[in-house]
Length: 67
Image (cartoon, rainbow, N blue to C red; front, side, top):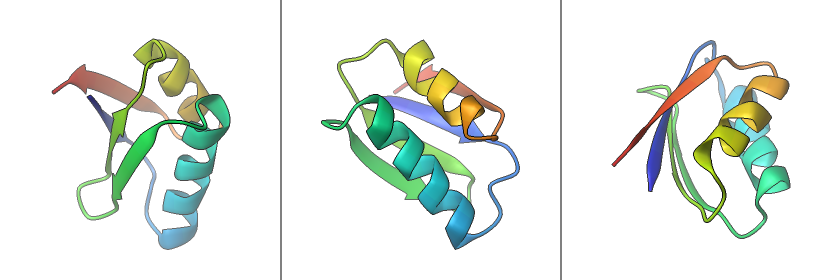
């Protein structure tokens, strides 16, 4: 599982956009978005850099750590 810190995620629409980007990259991913902490916890089989790229392509700078 990876935790992504997502900049500029400030509302429910933003969280929905981030989740959609993650699911587009990996439809099988399990995702928990926390708007308050501006994080997304993602269980995926993809390389996390691919998920990070999808989030950034959606317009949200992000970084990740393994948890």
